Length: 245
Ligand code: BV8
Ligand code: ZN
Picture (cartoon, rainbow, N blue to C red):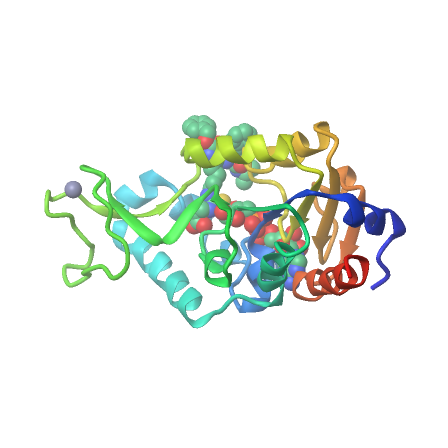
């Protein structure tokens, strides 16, 4: 893919670089996106599953969905896109990953600074006493329960729920102070996460979109690289090896 000269110029001088990622970066790891043609929302309606009321109405169904997704995550591994973002840490003073994904792949890839806006599928907590229950849960009674009798739920942000305040505040601060803001594999329609694109833009950051198609963010991007992130991001690494050698 031809890398535009204005992007090359930015890569030469950038110090603080953010990678804002969505489900698309994990597509090449075999994890279905939400809204693409193989999207999981297409089969299962979000209003039925990713919200608290649905969980209280039918915790077993919601747990089946998360256990299904967890099984896919456990059979997946970080792809070349996740790994390229880790390697970017060699070429810039400050690299931060802000992810909407709950699949834990950026952490498994080895990224050092990750802000998880929508939680993490590997973490769980009791809805009554908030006790953390990470890793394997006991489903022998169908639904995992806490010692206090409360239901245990996945530690992910459902629709209508607030994002973890610390993660969102850190993300907003980073978006206000970065030189480059890569928007990787997201349809940029879920708020308030997608508002970070606007924060970065208003701070004067150079916006680079990496996606296989146009999105809500495309009109704000200074450069759109249309291609799979697992191929485009390693190509930027190859370029950096030349620029920074
Ligand atoms: C909230 C976790 C405050 C669970 C998810 C305005 C302001 C504030 C809120 C709202 C608002 N308008 C509407 C809302 C409500 C809602 C919202 O944004 N709805 C949307 C649908 C319109 N927001 C909320 O409810 C949020 N909370 O607002 O709280 C509040 C509180 C109380 C009362 C009122 C307000 C909470 C949102 C979080 C929901 N949780 N997930 C779980 O995962 O199970 S959302 C879900 O969507 C995932 O987290 C996912 O990450 C996120 C975004 O989706 P994407 O990652 O972008 O994935 P998608 O499939 O859409 O796109 C994939 C992209 O990849 C595509 O562009 C595709 O082209 C591309 N791609 C595919 N393959 C590749 C690729 N790109 C590159 N390479 C490839 N190989
Ligand atoms: Zn409890």
